[in-house]
Image 1 (cartoon, rainbow, N blue to C red):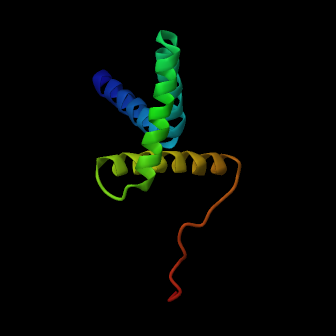
Image 2: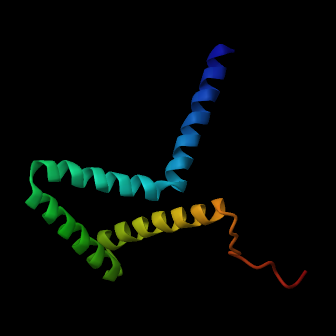
Length: 105
């Protein structure tokens, strides 16, 4: 019985953390980019500048591509940030209608 309770608790926390990653993934993605830049910039300022330029180039290329792994990665990042924007708007009380009910009712 105690083992079952522990499994339920573990399942709850895993589900909570996974949903937090989904809803607030844009925050985690931004923080990981900032910390990666900080780590590289402490080693070398020019390497930090090159990292920023490479990130800007990757964003520019990813947005313009229509297929392939780079386009898929860019699409996932855009979807993550779009989800974050939607969650932040919902937290402020703004609602958005994403579908309309059928008119045949």
